[in-house]
Length: 132
Image 1 (cartoon, one colour):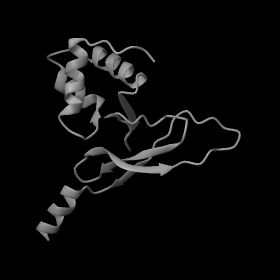
Image 2 (spheres, helix red, strand yellow):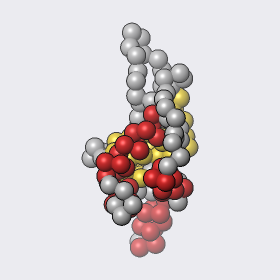
Image 3 (spheres, one colour):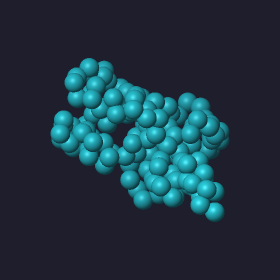
């Protein structure tokens, strides 16, 4: 872990996470911030913020990397981690405030952990009920 430098770029990047509680893909962050910083800077800052447990990352069903604020998923002390949800209708990806217990695996050292739950989000469920 390092020390988070309070740069203008760091503040701009963190502001994107304050706008919504949803996870944000690296691709979307690069698109949103292209006029303020290049993609190398975005990736470098995300790596730094993840090292410092400010954000955590996980992969969706297509292998795209997403970032959520806080709650690092690869913490090895207690293996009680939260879930990630991907809506198969609209593509929204979010961290769920639901923990799951992961048992210790004999003769193994777990470095990372993630569970991706897929289905339809609340908005898509409501919309499908309205159109029926």
